[in-house]
Image 1 (spheres, rainbow over the protein chains, first blue to last red):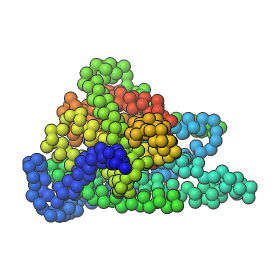
Image 2: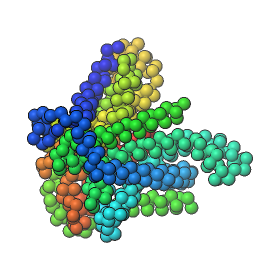
Image 3: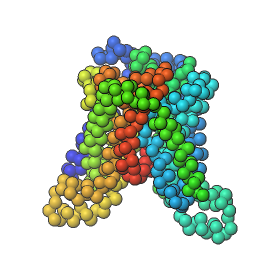
Image 4: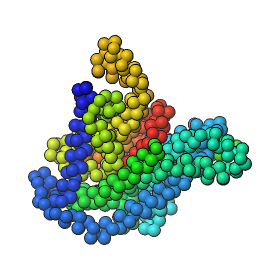
Length: 269
Length: 249
């Protein structure tokens, strides 16, 4: 009986100290006037002042909009491409397995390396320094990063669709298109939904790609909430305001993760 | 025919990586990368941080996942909710408070600080992935061992653990990849050039305005080879792990 607690204790204590406490501290700091000078000693309470400052900052609104567009567009394109690739590679043909797993190579490459790579590839075209093209270009790179995950998740969902159903539809004379909409689609929908929510979460919280590729520039044209928060904290030393911005991101992620958990539960049923 | 299409699709997808590896000329490699001791330093730092993250994550996650899967425990749903919701934390959100706390404790610019920080996000992920693996081992295995006089720890160590080694290996690889690829904590907790891993090293080396793309791509290749090697060696395991529901932040 006692053994169970001994086994989980180290991990739980670790997470309480280094995950839960920092998150709580983040909330506390968002209500305080924390600067580089007061960071180590203790800071004054300022109520919701940081949030008021953040919300009335035009840059916050811009960054929130960019985050929404960046995540929304990336998820849609990733799902479309990932679904097409998953349907293709779910077929049985020589090499299918090997090719499928080769996509995952991109997964092992640090995001910093991929971002630097695309910064170079796009440097000639100048897309990353063009205020109109920078966001679409980043969506493209994000899709390159995210497609393997979507493909692999959907492949797992596709292999769970019983073969018999396809064969039955085939016998009934259904064409490939009909079989997709009548058999594959309804059975794949829960997986698709869960993958979409997870991708949205990962894109909304991602910082590495945008920071390395553009640092939110040019002229804030690709500023997203994580890069804005980073700049507030580590360049302007406005710890409280930065924490407020991050808590807004966190609130959105929290709602999304509730959606994900619900989708998961429904899938199990 | 399908094989050809399948091959072309992968080839097109991976083309940028191939171009990156092929681009740097001999000079970029010899003088700017291999001839620069600082690059070697970054690689060593990354190895220490990634291996440390891997070991610490395993030490904490394996027993916890075992207990959550197989032992009687109060508050399991709360703990699992904590693990699952931790998957949603942006690293950048932890970076600010950890910077404040680690500054107080003198843990900035240390390996320990970076390993602790990287483990905070690798650990919940590891537990979520490992728990089903432990749960899949039939209960009778442990019960038989107890009848034979095995202690609670003995059941864990000698009976169940050997059966879930593939799952443990997957988590080890993912934790290593995570520790190696981390940018946010490296950026915020290691400002001393001596402590920088390859991720911020690459960034600091070439910066936002580089025109030395040969050097940058050679460095990027160096930063990619170790995680890619680890990945390819364990590839089957990792694909299964990712399919089980995770990706990197």
